[in-house]
Amino acid sequence: MRSVAVVGASLAGLSTVRTLRAEGYEGSLTIIGAERHEPYDRPPLSKEFLKGGVEAEALALGSANEYQDLDVRWVLGRSAVRLDPRSATLTLDDGRQIRSDAVVIATGATPRTIPGSDGLRGIHTLRTLDDAVALRADLVSGRPRVVVIGAGFIGAEVASTAHALGLDVTVVEAMEVPLERALGREMGRICSALHTDHGVRLLCGVGVSGFTGAERVEGVLLDDGRLLPADVVVAGIGVTPATAWLAGSGVEVGDGVLCDAGCATSVPNVVAVGDIANCPNPFTGRRSRIEHWTHAMEQPKTAVRTLLSGSPAVPPAVPPYFWSDQYHVRIQLAGHVGPQDEPQIVEGDVDSRSFVAVYRRAGKEVAVLGVNQPKLFNRLRRSLQKQPGVVTPGRLLS
Ligand code: FAD
Image 1 (tube, helix red, strand yellow):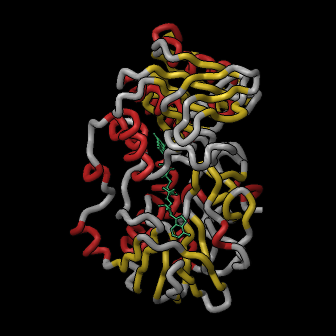
Image 2 (cartoon, rainbow, N blue to C red; image 1 turned 90 degrees about the vertical axis):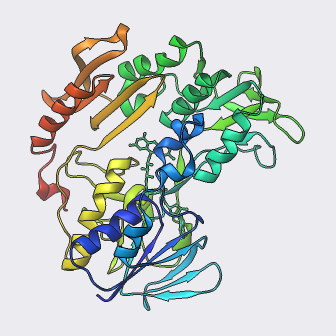
């Protein structure tokens, strides 16, 4: 293998080239990124950066010196539009062609939008630095009423930041219980109470049917007929994996790029990593995409072993992990919570919004949730990791 092209210049793409070099790969490396920015960190976009506490330079994931050492050819501000698997050639949106011996797909996902929001100023999604710059400008422009659609983690963080900026915030959530899919019903209810603790309105079990306003949004229409006056709207309603450019490539896609546990796709010498990769996970025993920072950072180690060895690498059985910062509270989850898993508080109490809960399935610990308890959480996370995982590797690799 003398040349590798990485499509997607963000956390998973950068982590892949770092790992390739660390593993002794000496061939050429090209990174193609649709954004014009060098890789930057996304988590602050809904937190400190949105609040105005840090500037864009502080978000850089690497440095000029490191990039020089990595000896990477950057192609930024350009998208891959086609992959021809027979000749292993990428075509870019300016017509350029890049041939390589292996391709890494690290194109992440793009936010879903709400029908009727096109062309109305003041309606935002949040994924990129440019999105965050535009949203920040709107939040500090003296327009006081913010409606956040979706009470998932991104929506909750945006609501928390807008509240900290002194704005009048309403959160609208279609599900009866926010965060239920991630944390289960009971803990979803407890964690989403952070909004109401701080005087942020939380409307659950109601959808959005449209918007009012001519050029700029003036209100959000709800399914039940209510109209919420709004100067700024943020839709945090999930993402669509960026797979459209792979049409006709032979790379099998479903919810993301379908891979084996070693990140190999249906096309030889093409692997996928990060938010876009839909792989069987040895800890959870499920096939899924994992949209967490730590996963995008770590998973490329497996993909690189697969590429360099030519056979599927077996990933470590590590519980998926994410954190979220809202209203001065750090929420951390390790593992995977299923609908029937029973949480039990093992430390602290819910009323003080400082506790640790352990989830069990058939008597076995499968996840740990920490709310403002980082020390104990981290200890339990490590012990969860020492467990052999929920399924056997044999089943996982089938
Ligand atoms: P991405 O970061 O999405 O990068 C994909 C890149 O590929 C993008 O730059 C995109 O422009 C580019 N691309 C797409 N299509 C093409 C193409 N055809 N050609 C070339 N380039 C292309 N996780 C946590 O665990 N904790 C948090 O607190 C947290 N906060 C977050 C806050 C925000 C606002 C966001 C958006 C995410 C947050 N995350 C958090 C999730 C974490 O940032 C992601 O899991 C991580 O960024 C995934 O990295 P990735 O490289 O797989 O994908």
